[in-house]
Length: 117
Length: 113
Image (tube, rainbow over all chains, first blue to last red; front, side, top):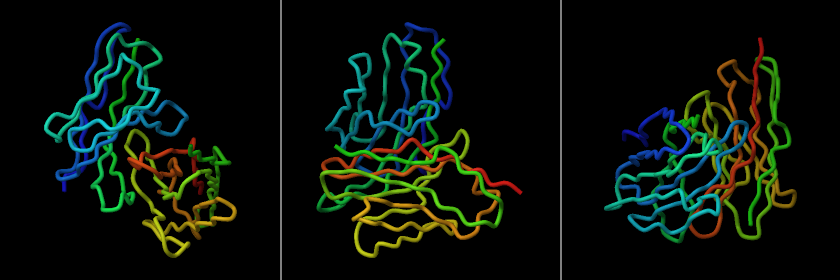
């Protein structure tokens, strides 16, 4: 079990540029979540996938944000026309789906820290 | 809608002393409750979780928490802390479809010699 991995760990970009982050979940975990964490706050839910289907998006996810999970394996989160307010830690988590919709542990990756200058 | 309140943003404590980190939640559906720990520049690691059954839950590193439905609380405790417990602790709740987590704002535990 190699855990959830995220790439890159750090990204510095200029305002207006596009950025893309990647998340590789634990193998055979069919749920994948994206969260955003700003300084001094707890993580906030952005979106989640079950296999390749994106089932829910937070209102925090403006139209500049898009996430994909082709073939139900890794996922990418893209931010277009970045703004300084997008500076945050972007966390990915994965979990198996248990019968009866019982919550199971979400395993978090190390995060990608984005700084928009 | 669900929400989590962590009443203390910072808790200083001396090594080997007991500690309690407070968490209250609100939810209109049945909930599952979690405590995660975050060390600097790292992701979150699960300490313990309550899904059902016994209201006293034991986790890793000697931590435990008690689910109190009438008080809508899920406080985290440890009888004797160590320097290595210095970290940020987050309480979270999930429920409903998708089981997304709603986190509190975190409590910074600082253990001093």
